[in-house]
Structures are given as C-alpha cells and as structure tokens.
Amino acid sequence: MDIHLECPELAQLAALCTKRAISVPLETFEKEDSSLSKKRRHSVPLQSSNELKAAAPETPVLAQLTNPLDALVFAAQATVELAEEELKQDLEPLSPTRSKEYRCNFSGCGKMFYQLAHLRIHERCHTGIRPYVCKYEGCGKAFTQLGNLKTHERKHTGERPYVCQHPGCEKSFTQLGNLKTHERIHQAIKPYICSICGKGFRQRGNLKVCVVGKCLSDYIMQMFIAYLHQLP
Image 1 (tube, rainbow, N blue to C red):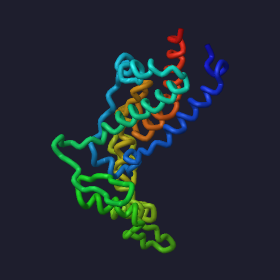
Image 2: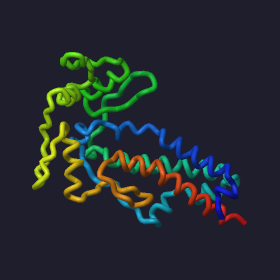
Image 3: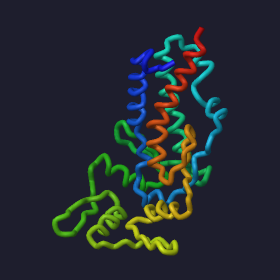
Image 4: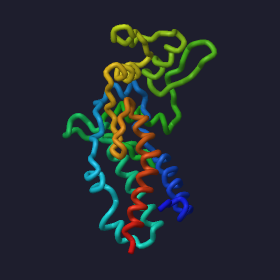
C-alpha cells in the first residue's frame, strides 16, 4: 500500500513532524570544535532492530490510540525524544559522582553547570556582553570567550598550528577539533552511529542531521504503515 497515495494528508503530517523534529534545540551539539576536543568522544551504541523496536513507541500505548493521526504524532514525538537521549550520551560527565551545582537564574533558562566560570560565560548569552574584541583594523568582532577570539585571530594571521602527522598529508587547521575530525579520514573511524539506519559518521553534527532528518521521516512512515497493517 502506498501511504502517500492512499492518504496524502498523512504524508504531509509526517513531513510536518520531521520539520518539527529538526527544530528541536540541540545546542549542546553545536559547540565549537575547540570545546568538543576536551570532552570524551565515543560512539552512540548501535542498536539491533529488535532493541530499537523494543525502545520504539509501540505497544501498549500506541495500540491504544484508535485515531491513526494520533498514533503518527505520538510516534514522531517519542522518536525525537529517543534520538535526543541517545545523542546526549556522548556528553555525559566522565565522573559518575560529579554533579552540576551552578544554575542560570535568568528567566526561562535554568541551565546547570559544573563550574562557576562556565556559568559566567553562559550568562553572556543573556546579557549580550562580549568582552573579547578583535583588535585587527577593520574587524572589531567580539566574543564571549578568550579562546574563541584567539581562534578568530588566526584568520587574520593565517596561523594554522594544528598539523596532521599522517605521512604525506601535512594538512593544517586553526582548531584542534578540526584536526581530530580530519584524522578520522586516515583512520577510517566513524564513531557516531545512527541507531535507526546504522550509518556511521565522523562528525556529531552529521549524525544529528541523519537521526532527526531523513531517518526519522522514514522511520515514522514505516511505523505507521505497520500500524495500519495491524488494523482489522
């Protein structure tokens, strides 16, 4: 059965759910590579089809939804939550006993941080304060962190201090995180695995696009078709 032909409004709803999923705020995965390089990097565990099915929003809740549109929306929302949880595993603290003690008190925020210095840096997002200003003539760009300013200044100086040590390569980069990502090309390492399709990626950002983009749309449609087949 072609779901797009039989029920075109469902196809439109699936596209809407996917668009909504892509808009889910995942700021933690958009930090600069310089900060990512300081964190533990490991792959999201690849789930088997049976494990994914067990984690997916099926019975008993989905079976209780008599309206097919409700079932599709429920599947979309639950799948987005599952994808977010899996992606956030990579940013868990190295120490299981460590806790975030410093809370942002700006209205509607409430984010928590391990160190007071990190909270102060975050607060600049609310206040708009950018104390680190580029001194090069005609530039004047400002940044919330000194490290970001130093990285920016390399665009003016042409400095690329991080050099690939692989024989015959010698490519250089302005940020350590970019070098680490590049080195995976030589090592054929793709540590970020999509738990829906199983495809591997060298960068977390590409995994995000896969999980909450095409994979999510296809997964929702497959779930809904399977649901229709179960109807009497």
